[in-house]
Image 1 (cartoon, each protein chain N blue to C red):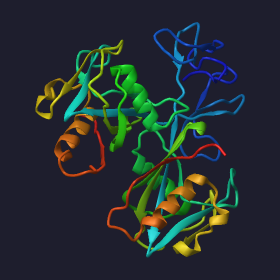
Image 2 (tube, each protein chain N blue to C red):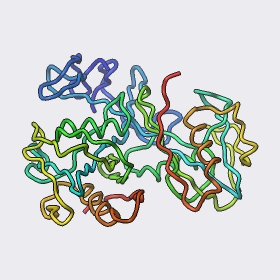
Image 3 (tube, rainbow over the protein chains, first blue to last red):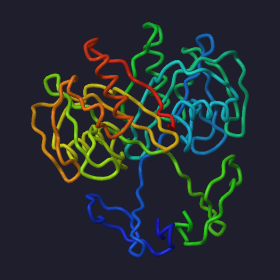
Image 4 (tube, rainbow over the protein chains, first blue to last red):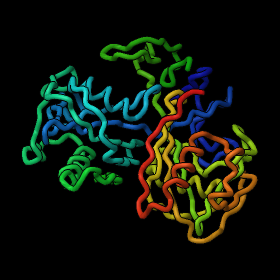
Length: 178
Length: 178
């Protein structure tokens, strides 16, 4: 961030008046340019005890398997964003069952949220973001070819708790730098 | 958003290549300027069946009562942000018990998250953001003088479920425009 997006003046970096953290701010128009964490919203879609995974067709982690998800957009709820991403990446339209996991990645300024979701049928298809989409029984999950540690955490939590009753516990965890 | 914060060129607004939503983007350096929802992270602090509330010393809703909370910052977890805000606004250092509520406000591009938290003692004090801080038994909550509908939703959920313990259900709801 180098220039004010309101008036194009070169930005300053420091603690603004009445604040306690350094921020980019404009010495001309005085606007403070806050930067905040973003939400990655995902589903863990289920069809007859099988889990829908997507093989990534884009970087990062091209060729590895992931759950459908992406950046939450303005104007939608967290759950609506998860369902939108599931359609965009896997051409499936599941129904939300419950919030399954919240995973903090403070080093990346992200919070990842995963919803357990029930597919109405086995319909799914590759997209520009997913070179393959497929249904996996828990013992078939490609653990050595997963794209992200957040996805691994959500899958492990689901597999561990899936038979323990109607509501699954909410996983709240953080991914620490390697 | 009028100018590119990387190169100061006037921004264009439209659907960038390989995207499906209009965004601000730079016709010179091609950077896309994404805008995403922000997280407001809060506590509902408890001391001996009483709830800690803060009377707002700043706009918006100056003079009305709220739970401690504010914008999540880069580099922290959602829960760490809630505890930081609780210190900044009420000079209390509670311990997180559980996530209590997630409230979507898509029209404001916000997601509010509330943690039930236990105070180690009754210590609390006014701050530059809170003209008063006080402990309220549930029947004393100033329902007609609350600052935000999100706070009302979290308080109503807590009061309704507080005796059903040990774990309270997670409230997931959205606030619709009036």
